[in-house]
Length: 131
Image (cartoon, rainbow, N blue to C red):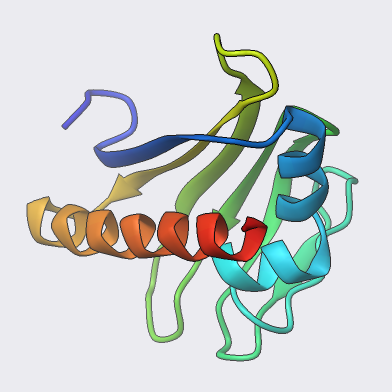
């Protein structure tokens, strides 16, 4: 629980791939379908809207190629937005990258726990897809 962003959750993992490969995957159609949801198309322009096949919607708040994507996220039936950030950075070990998922403005500890499990599963799916 933070004063400015409410309840938040972050999940990170070091992957045995160079940062550029992780970024290309995570910002491409297959990667976006895994972490955001099937059907979403993200554009690099701030304010660009998106919607997934299940009706999740939001808009791009920031897009720095090779570094991070920040966007709002409203699940179907929800009355409020959360904020998701996906970031890729160079790991200390040569040829490896750190992938981070962070979500803030969650409503309470229960939503935080639910989203922690969600992001852990997403991370596992991304790692499996990268091979």
